Image 1 (cartoon, rainbow, N blue to C red):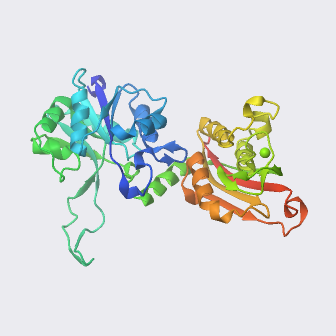
Image 2 (cartoon, rainbow, N blue to C red; image 1 turned 180 degrees about the horizontal axis):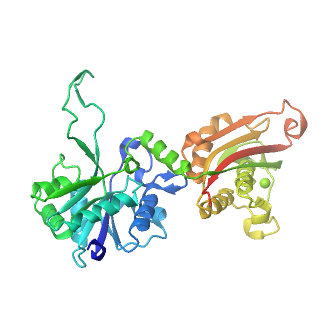
Length: 392
Ligand code: MG
């Protein structure tokens, strides 16, 4: 019965996600090399390969959205509203021209959707009287009310209480009608509430702990760890590089321009640290070295920013379905001083690797004035990375 239902998915991605920390909204943050929303789309297309997918986004997020979801085929992109409720309503209205039988409404901040949960939702509609279905988990912790001073008073009994997740599934005419007839309210945080306010008959199906919502930075870490844990083939790579000084007024180290008495000589921008890191990543997946991928004899790499080489190595890792777990870089020189720039370097590298900053370490040492770095003839860099690939 449910096999013949025409299914659409509406992903709500219009939020600004401020509780997960400053910077890019959480749905566009990289999660072990792939943005949260792309992981969400991947989960849905795996579970429902023929469903039409609509996404509601903020008007300000178009460049972020297109960069994050390149390659996914979508039925439409809809402009969000001032509340979550308005955003969902806009999305449902956009489907009117080609109405589905069922619509699954999902929050972009929940990247892991179990195929079993989706199957449970759809099967619930074998009962013709059901208009809404949502995945839920029984509350196991004790609930308390906390007052302004932090003191706990007794809360409601947990008995009979469930936590409800998304995706939530609805018969399309019902949920469209319910949204059109329900005034916006800050107290409405999901679509099952909208359905219930209009008398929709619902069923809760078994949810999954993996369907948690990314709200805080701690949730982002948990999600990143979830992705990495699923990749069981652990690789280590190492890289080493040296560039000599020549005339100039700055050096590039981990993508940061640092004023100096000399520049580093090289075919590209001579970012010795990114070259060592690129070699480490190539080494971890058995992909040779940077010179093999970008021959110095090739004029197109002249003066090229070295983040291009690192991004290429990362694309090879992503192409294998893998992710970098951590990176440790050592820059070896007497001068310039690296310390004042290390946090910017860490941020740069973490962005390119698509991992959180606590998985990236950039440090510097001197060689006690010994050898070529001690004589200030150039800079050396070493890098070690751990990369995780799927077990085949
Ligand atoms: Mg080099």
